[in-house]
Length: 314
Image 1 (cartoon, rainbow, N blue to C red):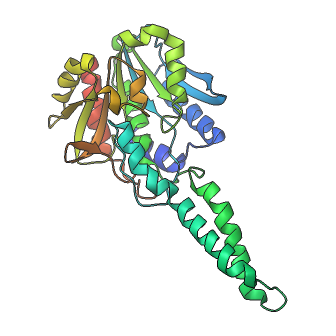
Image 2 (image 1 turned 45 degrees about the vertical axis):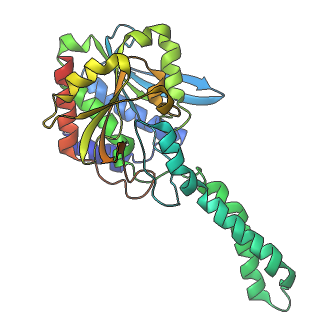
Image 3 (image 1 turned 120 degrees about the horizontal axis):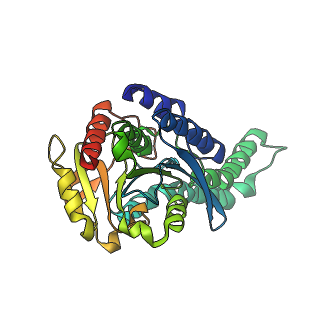
């Protein structure tokens, strides 16, 4: 299938993968596309703290030398100011999202307190019906709406995070010959935007063997100004080799342990993560995620990345 058609199918047709039913539909459709390429596919279910997750596993991670990972779930919608997502720095992403995530609750709480102190004493439905109804309804909204706003509603548009990574994994799989397919596995993980249930499932399934395998993570690869690769110390050579395969050499950055909290990257030892980013000072950021502006997934970036990864594997 053409990359453009895949973008329409998964970024438009299956744009939300937030609830279990939405995720199951995506896993089923993506599984069919991998099977059409001749791969063996299975869904692996697991639990972490009673939260169910399902990974789409393509090939055999136990025998593979290289595992290509992309999370397929989509983030919640954040109603505050646009956040900056730092794919190589979990604490920075957490800090960036903290105020926008809680802003609705703070604002609603302040309005609610004002109504309770200054308007509730004057509510009289018999004498002032419409003003009283207005303040009563607004008070109800102030107490109820934050529960849905703070991490409760799915983001509607998710072209870049992380539909782009899933499509890039599929296009990479398409470009591998039969011989190389025996040494590569693809895993589309669940809850990569939070909780990381899919990463727990993969680690538990492979045990210590996962630390001896090369792991290539694809995260937000459809939009941005430049390519960047985050790496752990023992995967520096892999990062350098792959960086040179891009049309314009990708920048690489060592990811120290303290930057890996709250990230899927922290689950893997011999790993790199590839993203399309904007450089801000010494940090690499992805803009316009978790909001209605996540509407870009460029075909040329998907094609370039899949060419690079497949060439490296070959």
